[in-house]
Image (cartoon, rainbow, N blue to C red; front, side):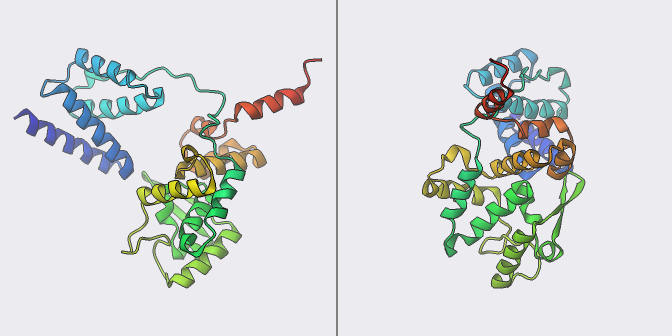
Amino acid sequence: MRRDENCGETQGYIGELTKKERASATIEKYAREIERLQSFLAGREPEKELLLEYRQRLCGENQRPQTVNGKISAINGYLKSIGHAECCLQLLRVQRSAFVDEDRELSQAEYERLLAAAQDRKRLRLRLVIETICATGIRVSELRCITAEAVRAGRAQIRLKGKIRVILLPKQLRKKLDRYIREKGIREGAVFCTRSGRPLDRSNIWRDMKRLAKQARVSESKVFPHNLRHLFARIYFALEKNLAHLADILGHSSIETTRIYVSVSEREHQKTLAKMKLVI
């Protein structure tokens, strides 16, 4: 009986996330975490002592603290949903790093190598996807908002989590996309679609980018859609130094989130320290 209850509680929680307009990828991730928790509980009621043991297990899986906190957030939301708010777990305390991880930071030179590797006609769509995300700073989930209508208007309206923002398409990108939709006969709707006509999703793009990384001789750990958004943020901030405006462009509710995007590498910080010439 308890298993059926778990299933019903999980579906109820998923329904709440859907009503809150959480991204589909987030909902899928939260659902997986709840399934893992229920497997650990094995039919037992969620009690604080058991949940503390589960958090300790998560910490022992050699995952980044931010990853563990993401799992805990999913669990806490679920506990509140089923009436066990008193069992919610505290997040791990994490000091924000002053430097970005260079092993995951995509440079502009590496970005250009990716584009060069996608020059052939068979990879035209992938190249334009990469350029569109990197030139606008949109999330991969927002790529479906790049429509034929948006290309003609030179701007796209992004709707996410009940919020609306407008992003501008650079003139050069707009020309490329306009040529693409004319060749493909796309008159309305999403520019980037599968053969069946459905908008490309994260998994399609992720897989194709990983393949491209090998050909471009760029570390696969650096090549994923969200890293293009980070590259846009770093280059924009280096030119404009306007964190508040960048937060608006990226659709961040908090500037603290935007600060993470524009963190510099240790190598760049060393260059700045050398320019200061304070050791004589």
